[in-house]
Image 1 (tube, helix red, strand yellow):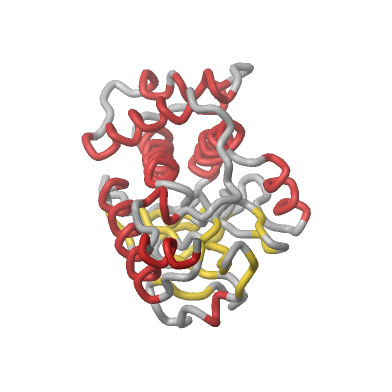
Image 2 (tube, rainbow, N blue to C red):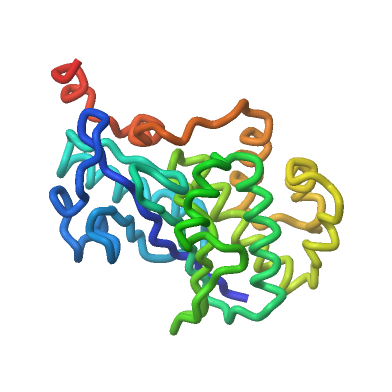
Length: 242
């Protein structure tokens, strides 16, 4: 099975810690572009069969955005400065029930472990991020439940890796992730995630390694400029602003 993964995660822009409209910094038709609401930025890396490759493409776009607007801080998560922000994932497969259920069980478990639950609740109350939210697309499906997972290369790679493995597990191996999770906590379920597969694809092995590291971290702070996490903050600009 040849499965491609794409995405269009959203970001809030700030300057000196204060909200700034994305349209003042980026163009709508760019890879570092605008959401339908042009107050919010959107990263458009295309697609790949490899979560590693797609994560690298995301970094290239963030680097471009940072070079274009070095004074802009970028914020991910579920909700920031009054705006719900999503991390939609595109998959080249039809959204049959078992695939949607698998994505929902696995990625909601990840959210339970690493996301800001207050932010998630605010996004859900705004009408976005509901469980099992998806759209049919010409290429397959868009899974719409996750918030923006762009905080770091690790959170991005882990999310994309788990999305790929969720589809492989349900469509090729007939795994029932809902039954496997059962009454286990989200952390226990994900800590053992690789054991549910007889073999982990090579391009997913680093994502699994990063998952195990994320699960032992203390609470993650989402309300922060993500660029330093990607090694992209403009050091000269930051020195001048200090």
